[in-house]
Length: 240
Image (cartoon, rainbow, N blue to C red; front, top):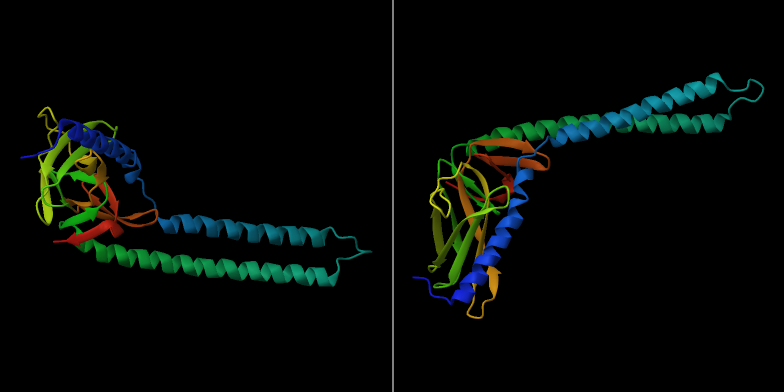
């Protein structure tokens, strides 16, 4: 049974709702991903283009120089040295791009072993899969804890208030909103808060649970997909 004053419970709910809405703003960008090698290749291509421009300018300068006052040989040697340095840098970057691509491919192959496994992930993205989701948190035994879940539009769809057990406390969501209606599978934002006797609220550390359905390259590393929820590989705490 949850024991707390109505004012404290209201403060708890408001704090949890606000945090869930705030986390929902990141859900729209969670699925955006791209290959870091693609971005790098674009930078390398730009450098190669600059190399070609440099060579074009140099040959044009030589073609139109005044025969009675040719280019200073020292300046020409300096420009040729600069051109050689740029050319070597382009070749080095191309080789580096190849190494990055090979490393990402190897990591992707290795991480595919997570597909089908249940993982615990730190973060505020809660994956609703096949009408169920879950999380676990650690708070002081008997502490009143509030949980709020918001959809991608920032609408809080589910509230829960409970007392923490000693050690880890698990909470399961049946995918229904506060009115008892079943919601669609997807990525939701979740917040977990606690409140003290004075009505002061605080964050409660928690991890969400989900089943990995895919592994893909993200813009800054490898990401795992849990249904429609996409999270960085580095956020995984445990796998079973």
